[in-house]
Image (cartoon, rainbow, N blue to C red):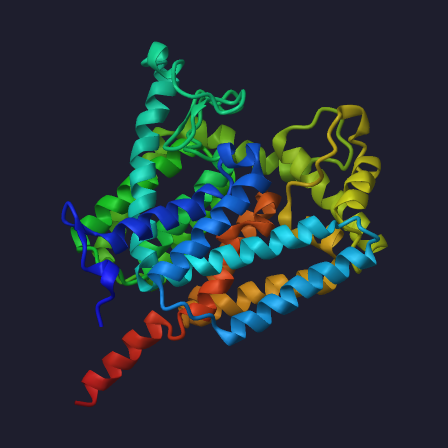
Length: 423
């Protein structure tokens, strides 16, 4: 049955499509953009209210009873941890985490089965725009025009479609996000969906989209992003139906050619960082990016062994500064490794609960055990580099999707194939 808002075209596009695009962009916006990070509490409340109104007007207004139970357990766990840590994990943080979970549910419930296609379209548009913005950054184009755009704090300009002149990463593509290491995850997720999920796009358009996302991914020069893509590429060779064996051989050749052309950048961004990560001591005096990540893990695990049931944010940051010897460096924000930080800050019970939820969600959504395991490993690789995303709406979207999409698309395809085979 067609709903009333699907009957009104806007320049050939239905209201539903417009609403879907805005909601998916909203989900991306509250998941690590720099403009959002300037006032996260304010933007989170506004985003939640927008999603709630959209859910009321443009959905069937139903909420899964299983998700409701999960949400109660999730919120209850955070409140219990707040009480256990004596407020080190504040009640406001527990409320914020619950709002993010429900926000993701409302958006995906409203967008429904169109979420994957809409996510890819929005992401491809942002990726294409980011390539333009990236070129203006590295070539210093349109300097006078860009300086007149609205500033995003003191960290660049505009920030809705692209964050121009980001001073932290002037030579890397970060799109609207606070750093390229965050942006790469959205790009890799889009490539994964195009490679393994059945979409409405033609084969030609699928490959055009993959090319745009891959070029944008390369311009991030993200070590974690390239490693995740390399892992996904192995999965692609075994599991994707997009190419024949000869086609996959051609793709391998293209990837090798790209690496050869950018050999200097790949060496400095990947090989050297991996060497630093594997060879650093716990308390190196001069710490590079790889050395900091390695020291973070060691510090997190020391805190975890002292506080198996969690210590909360405030006490965690304090102990991290003491044990990790960051006080003299003025760094008190804690570890960048979301996996070990979750163990240290939130404790073993909650970490098992949340990471177990991701395992369950990937298994339910992808059905194929090998593919689900690969997706989970890639997600853990991402969290290991970006602790911010252990409590982000886009991460929680993985969990809530498993409550909304009752049947796996891959499972439906297999069942249809079996039906055809048996007449």
